[in-house]
Image: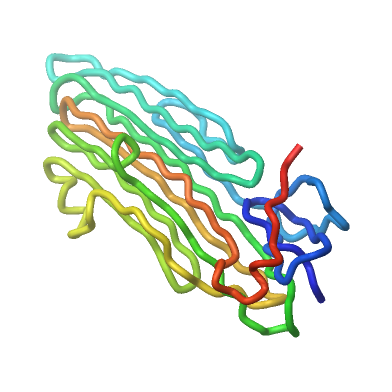
Length: 237
């Protein structure tokens, strides 16, 4: 079967004129679509201290305080955007006060399922490139008495991770770097469902501190793939 290359998640489409297709979950129609294909719904988790967690893209903002001479307040923020085939996850939070201050905590995670169609028979391999960066203002940041910010992208055969910590939480980074930027090549198998996972977390407590992190990975069919030259970018309505 010959399908179409799709640069952006979470499309679930096939179209004419290209050597390979990435078909992903929670898709929408786009120019050149021949047939929508249901794959598997993406999974989301959003959490921020002080508010009810969510299983849908969006934003959460929570605050809380503890009383007493060693108490204090926290604010926690989580955002996960899932639009036009792209995932962006961002978290931030801070605490102020003594060792009994309320903890700040944020979680943004997404699991995206995708299916590679053609060229070739079931079981054939098609290379694709994961590109991700966590640098500058988007890199994990943690400061204060006890804080941590952590970003992770996992898929079959590869990963990107970065972590920043302060105080006792610094040990949880386990030697990870505080930033990353680059591209890794992986392989999809024609006819086999695969997935990749984005996880961005942070917390602060035991006194004044803050954290933040952001991540928006992308995936394309590897341009060195012989049929990649046939693949055109599909615009989204």
